Length: 223
Image (cartoon, rainbow, N blue to C red):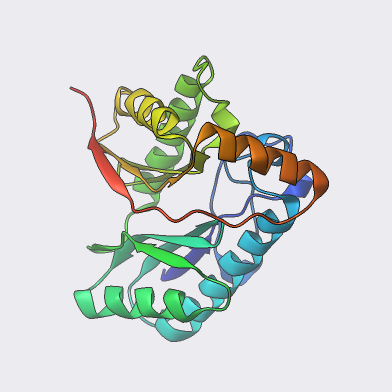
């Protein structure tokens, strides 16, 4: 089945602690791994990201729905991460262009692989792996584990969130040591501790801060 999938962080599901995915066409939305209670974005920014995810997924579905594709759409501070599988480079480029042109998107990280769509068992394994990674973060004192959003694809762990350089290194290292993780890709936005503290204060007032820009980086899993 060809699927364009959207993962959301939903305020109505604050108590949820596991991520999952569902076909957009059946209208199911699920909680991601970054909870509203510890999210470093404002509530308004989180709603913006939910809207972007739905819009981009719909646009991709309309354009690519007849092709053998499996695409996950995630957004953090209006930066869109595309993961999954597409049949060729042209389709990958087209998906990236569609996401880039979508309203209110500030950046796109196109991690689509040129492969046949993953199987249900592969996706089930990725869900289980995400749970293991999340569990590994629980005792990490440098950063609240729910401040980071986790996306898994074919054993690759993608990490999203607003972090300091030190926090990003710690989180990536913890994830890389989890059994079954093949690679860790950091899709973080980086800021100083002072800037993050200011954003937390802004979050408390309900204002919308300006999101910092950042490029993704890959960290191989530890042996």
